[in-house]
Length: 126
Image: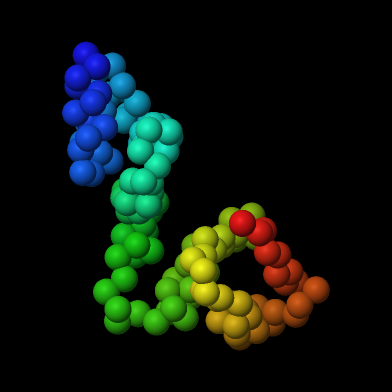
């Protein structure tokens, strides 16, 4: 039994391989498999999370598989269409990325955005 887990652990892409033994049942809820990957193979979380977004979200492929023909503004507009006052947009940024200008420009055009009135820019830190 431990050898099966070792085989899974040593896979190049363990996120695309079924979990061994009784752990297979965790795949019925894909987010649970993400937790196992985070605990045992944190180096594979980026790929696993990208695949989870593609599979779990209604328009996940649109968010993850940009073909280069869409500008960030177009992607942001598509994301905005999926939001409500209780379903916000969260940005998980890489170093150097700053979507604030695009968000503010779109907000001014779409909803008469006014900083401190109907818009608050909150940096959550690292």
